[in-house]
Length: 63
Image 1 (cartoon, rainbow, N blue to C red):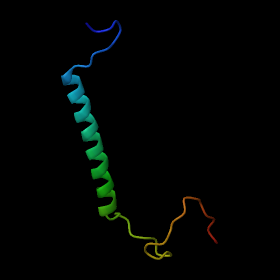
Image 2 (cartoon, rainbow, N blue to C red):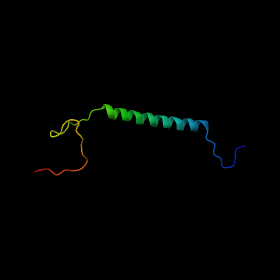
Image 3 (cartoon, one colour):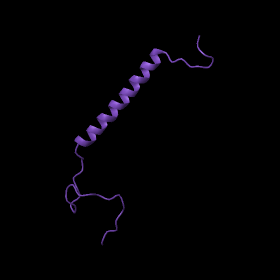
């Protein structure tokens, strides 16, 4: 007889959780490969070399 308050997870629930975890992992892995494989739509800026590091900080224009 099970102990009082012990939750028993059914086999179906356990299978669903494993399937959900597997699909989540497969989706993350696919997203990683797609990010690495797809080239960006916009060309590099004309004043930068292709593949040069970019900055997230705003810069003043020299005008």
